[in-house]
Image (cartoon, rainbow, N blue to C red; front, side, top):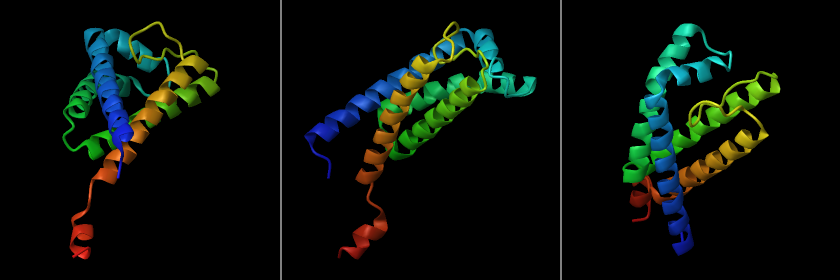
Length: 149
């Protein structure tokens, strides 16, 4: 069971990550061509992949943020959030290690991938992982309810 401090921390993570994803998605929706350039700077995807990601990811982020704020099926959406942030973090780390001067693209253009952005995104990932773990602990499978009788 999670105590009152855990409940507060869960709410803080939920509100923070939900707002973060909504803002990040909105910035990318507002400047789609700049976001395409940021994705292309990683030098990972072919042109068609860059365009597909640039068109879909911002909307996914906004929807994910709304679900995090709403709290519906939180264990699933928090887990997806942690996986997505983990993917972003690994991609940024590999790009930085390769010596590629990529633009982060998290909140618009102009922010290069650096130890600072990696540390910031690690913090985001830790918050999402915490939220996912705590949310899954609150979910009780039906089989455990039947076994306790």
